[in-house]
Amino acid sequence: PIAQPLASRKLTRKLYKCIRKATKHKQIRRGVKEVQKFINKGEKGITVLAGDTLPIDVYCHIPIMCEDKSLPYAYVPSKSDLGAAAGSKRPTCVIMIKPHEEYQEAYDECLEEVSSLPLPL
Image (cartoon, rainbow, N blue to C red; front, top):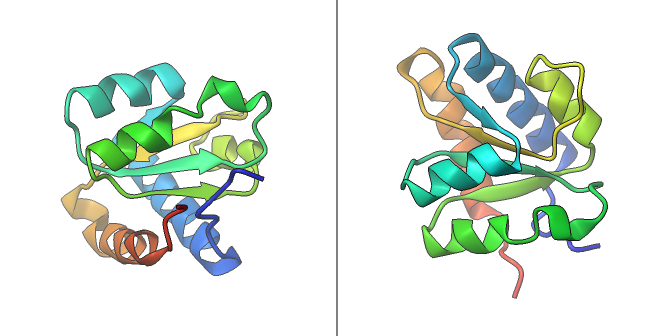
């Protein structure tokens, strides 16, 4: 219910693909604590959150932090798919994709689409 802006099915696929590429180059931050730490340090990237995480209190502060630092973020439907895309057996609720020249094209495409999603009021 609070998962706004929710990525479309097509964008979700693109984000998972970008996460897989980023994982190969170790350009990924995963988990609430790690993502939070690097947002505070001022690191740039796309933040991807899982929409089915309960309780919501676990990570409800992350979108606000992203907005303060003007970082793009989007929700995807499933945390288990998010964990699988990052190459782990465990589900994860937050992932940050960092830019890297190896997959810059895919990253820019995702960045553009995530940025154009309507932000919640």
